[in-house]
Image (cartoon, rainbow over all chains, first blue to last red; front, side, top):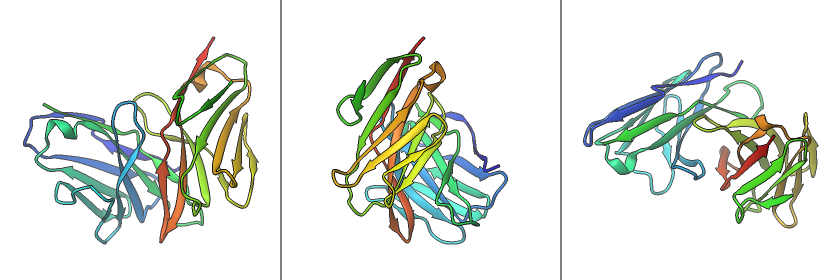
Length: 117
Length: 113
């Protein structure tokens, strides 16, 4: 159990377009999901914490109007990169924390590779 | 051999050797730590965790040691196998409402057959 999926696994888009990435918890409910960005050979940088039914909490330096997060259900969070530019090309990873239980463990998705031309 | 994750990002070992990956964390308020393994093009995979009220925890072939005095964490992998080749990250967690993780730089482990 505790499987997290992401869709798409990779996407190539033109500069100026918007891209939506989905993160789903397949076999558990997740009140809280996290979105990370990872550049090549670097660590994961937390972008925002997504809470079901409320506004996301963004980390310092992350533009909330550029990276729109919606967590409309207990199994789905979406990240929309608006007006994407080549510098937004990165590996985007989500994780989810179970609603039930005392565990703080996060379960990570497989990541989405975004390339902006 | 040893590798300090922040200064030597690559550790090469022979199959069957023991590996030690080190991590220095920054915040003395962090009280929960996790080691993750990330294979190329994939998301991180949980390996083992430890709370600040412990200084050692063992799993299957892995041991995590925590030294709060010097804010240092290590991951020991026994009898390293080629399938262990990956990038290993430590993550410190500090409670801000709920636990929010901060990932360290990472160490690339290369296991030679």
